[in-house]
Amino acid sequence: MTNRRMDEIIRHQHPVTMPATTSVRDACEEMHNRKIGAVLVTDAKGALAGIFTGRDLVRIVTAGKDPGATTLRSAMTKDPHTMPPGRTAIDALRVMRDGGFRHIPVVDEGKIVGVVSRGDFRGLEHDRLDVETGYWETIR
Image (tube, rainbow, N blue to C red; front, top):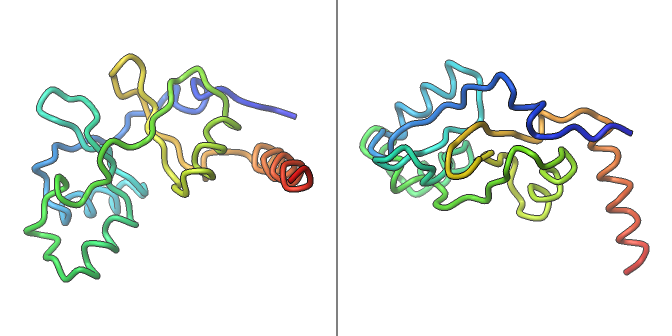
């Protein structure tokens, strides 16, 4: 079975990053226009500060906050799990499954190089994770 490395998946990526001062509304417009499910939020030095996803938007809306007046700083998931580019697709899928999230930023020595989501992976990689999970459930 195939097990691609993160390098292969992010090779031609240009991840969408936005400063923490960006409004939730502006971030959502960009996500809609680019047909993506997450924006990486950066600090003043361009380092990863957080991630903003559709799940974060749901939390903001259900709390009754105005997306135009709410900044990513207060809406993002702070200090998200990250992975280096040399890890495998299965490694990323495991981290996402165990953490209960669908996106993971790829960071190389503090520099943002990409972001992957569950949808970036082939069926064989999902199948392999399902088989692996089945083995662990049998052992327990």
